[in-house]
Image (cartoon, rainbow, N blue to C red):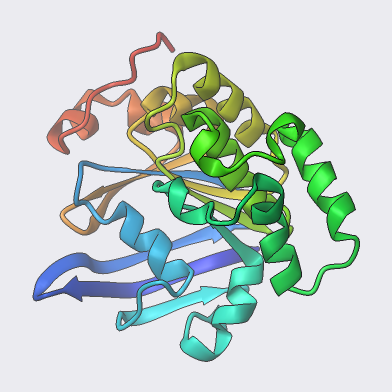
Length: 237
């Protein structure tokens, strides 16, 4: 069943075309990676899905619901967005309060229990009472993911989730993402992560979809990758 649908979507910013007549569908439970060189439109796609950007042409629907202003609140209960700049999601005095913030805003019950459950799942119980500025990059990334998972969205959007992480924290985060039983849409330059996590890869170039297929068919295709300013994954597959 189609969960997210883009039909002939275009978006421009200050007379620059960012997305040009994009059409694709994402099914419930699918794990999708969006790849492309810088400026290809990957992050813009995520922001359009959640209503953080508007004034697009064409049609975007989430569970057949148009992504328009009157539906933003409902859409944001379905889609959880973990920003590349995760510091912007950690603004309360402690991690515990950051995770509780969304729960309080969306009217959840048993908030303390939900916070503790999320912390245990992410193995961050030891940082719940710490402020964000005292956390490592890996801890911040997990804490920001916790703020989103707490509100139980059907779909997780992750913008460059492994950027800036050391190998250990990268591995921890990849394992957590892989095991999430949700629809996952990930923008990334980490192509080895894409091979490990994603069922499907879309390549964006100059605002257009230039390839759409399985990780093996896309990421190991030298012509597709090099012609769109990308390198092959480092691992042997």
